[in-house]
Length: 107
Image 1: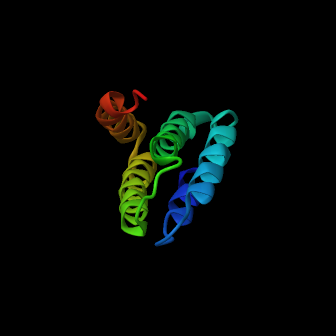
Image 2: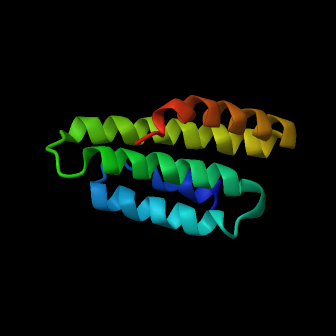
């Protein structure tokens, strides 16, 4: 998996927790062998995993999950576009994404 494939996966409008959990696993696996995009894939994986862990065992409406997928899609597309633009743009987008996530990653 790479950012292009991750972005394509996120084009779906609906997914369940098991789908998101599996997506996070695939992203983590890809991050270990991805090279340039590894940090982006790892951060996307962590964001998906944290969302699933926070809501595990609770009744969550479909709209909450759909909204999360839309937000993650937007993040993945920003990272993908920046990656395609230049190394500097990718690093800037990656740092911005990581900075936004840092306070929310504490479980």
